[in-house]
Length: 387
Image (tube, rainbow, N blue to C red; front, top):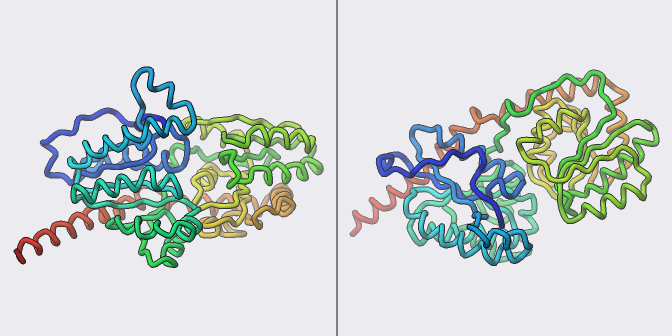
């Protein structure tokens, strides 16, 4: 775990004068770890800082270490060993200053290392905890790790970004509330793409769960039909060398592996492309698909996890089966051959973005924070009366 607080954050002292406001501490990855959780946490934190009824703080699960220790954070496994104690100490020092902890969560070992200590700190100091669970691996996590459901119950409320995860949690007797991810549409300029060019984009990290190899195989079929087609691959991960080798093996031309792309750079990358391809095997509610909606890229995606809850086949995008690179290629070619269909998908997807804007989810977060705090006060009052 490495990194610092969100880059958009401006340092602000935690003033005792603001004690009358509800104090909310976001515990999440910072933008030192590029990914959907970090982007969401940064966007939410900066929005909450503008709320007059709240005092928002941010505690990174991947704190930056000083001086020579920073070099250790570049080494896998070692960075966790040196960073985790600092994170836990930060929890003990900062949690008492807040009323509500908003804890971002993924699955498996990440859940044990980051959200679980935060929830335990909340219990220790009798602070209310909102667990904001984001992982598309939730069902497998809960099924394989039998203690996970009990640990999740340490939270006072569970918020998830999709109805898909609400349904998954219900299977395990857990009640979750769906509050959509935020898409800052003003950061992703819309561009008319008429006619569509055969320029494709994949921007998922290069890890097995995102199966970027499927996109490469689909692009190979596309390029047989359209020799001047181009593919932009933005992202980094453990499979980069393997995927570059596959591109050579397939004889692909005009494939650009951009590597790590920051959130600030991503709008320019979207603008270079005309069709978005996503071939993930496991997923929840990909921000990248929503960002493609906002930019005007028609989407071709697999049906992994919660994606069918976000993309409606034939209305806001085209959906194919997981691993079916032939169907992905056919769907992409269909967009190029049917401008009316592509225009309708782009138009409908752009409209769909409205429900992911801050104005649409703001009140839901405020009600959740104030609701758990009100419940805490009522329970304390009832306990005092009985005494």
